[in-house]
View 1 (cartoon, helix red, strand yellow):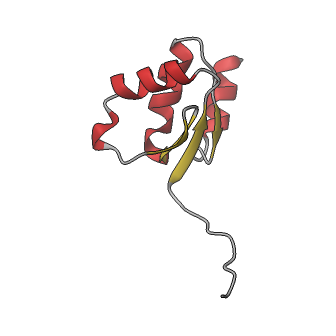
View 2: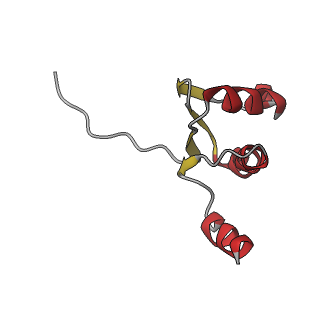
View 3: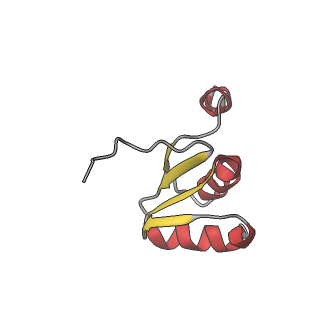
Length: 84
């Protein structure tokens, strides 16, 4: 059997949150039923990159600051401008 190399996906982001209950509640209230998403664990979810800003802003409004891998381009700049 031949080993395959790593698989890279485009257009998806990983959100990891310290508080599993807040993540679950936020995703339900954000109405992600129409958005394809996949949980890796109770604290980690993969969602389309286009939905990241909405989810992260709702989590921050609840006092939770998640880690995001593969966020939308330019998102770091927007967050840095808000902090200034």
